Length: 457
Image (cartoon, rainbow, N blue to C red; front, side, top):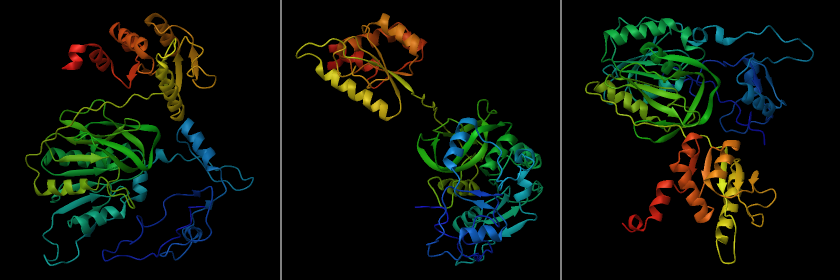
């Protein structure tokens, strides 16, 4: 069933802070909406109008019946590209590259506005910490988090606002679109505050992460694809734990040469790109993803609590991170086969090896098999992607590795012959030379089990 349009659009009403109750922005910011299928019936209980009606009210064109999968596959190969929606035989308009202009200036607020927590038993909220939020395209749920959840006073200011001379307890730099290097005024103001007030807590999100990084002396770059969607896995380098995050960015921070005192805080588990930095001692941190994502995931919402703790006590902060190596992509695996079989000997290796090859196929990993015995299940036609009918010896296996250049090697499915061969390839440096990773049972474990004294210990 079509999903786009199925929920419809909720009412345009404000909450007690005067911000939209159901929306993240004051208007529709995309210039067009392109979908494959569209639901003409809105069935959500809160819907008061259809998506089509809403787009029409805001003068935003929409089109359905488009093969969006074909567009996605093209972008996946060639990277992000400019596009246009053209009706009939009309010629395409003059191309406008949004990355060439300062998009933040188009979406930021025009004047400062103060939000105060609603009155409660503790008073009118006037004694709460004051946080200045630099609006680079800030979502309203960030305001909700600060005011309703953290219960701080939040002063939202334009992207080019000079906050360097004002008194406040913490600084927040929001998300936003486009090239971070276009926001030079924000970066310069940040640098001044960081120099003059080294104990002032600073927290950045998305574009705010990139701006804080530039202010710290880092560099940014344009990504080929960018990271989009609500299921981006990020590794917290303080704990090694992985969190699912929401992201929508086309630029990233180059963390290959961070300035002194700065450490990577998060890393993307998919592509290894930087997802956050923090200063080792000073109360400054930023993340590339959206901890406040509406409507989720909110796995990293604890970062707002962390910022509040820093607001209350910015002294004595010390950051410790662990090393993280992005896993090597495995696309081709060499399987050392069972070799010659006799009655009652090593038949289980033929079976287990064939199952390993099937598993590799299911994971879309190319399998290369070395097995001199044509009478095995492993060597059946159509099972392995490539088969070499040569002896399982270091000499012949090395030649195969030189030819096919596999990423990994399975040695546990070929019996004693394959295990001995893998150990020799490890010891003579062949595996290291060609960057072949031993998968499954590791060499140290193989050697240990061969040594009865070590095995018994």
